[in-house]
Amino acid sequence: MVAHISHEVIPANRYGESVYLKLTGNLRNDSAETIRRVVVTCATTNAFDFTDTHGKLLEKLSLKPSEVMSLNRRVAKVSGKPTTALWRLEGVNKV
Image (tube, rainbow, N blue to C red; front, top):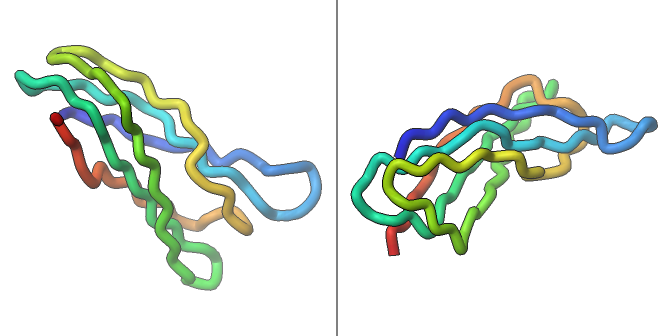
């Protein structure tokens, strides 16, 4: 699995400080098996050095060998724009 993951920070509304974290990028299956499930996590840190982890489970996939899947999904709503966001590909299931 080759993953190119990034994110967008989108205001939740015109008023207030809440924002949405949106997962963007793509996944490419470089294995010989079909991938059925992928787990992506994001650790965010705010201005007060408080860290929180958010996750996105992508299931019921049928990502065949050499196929590419684009990512464009909302992951979480957070209070205030994060100062850092670290994305990780946590797991891949080929069931």
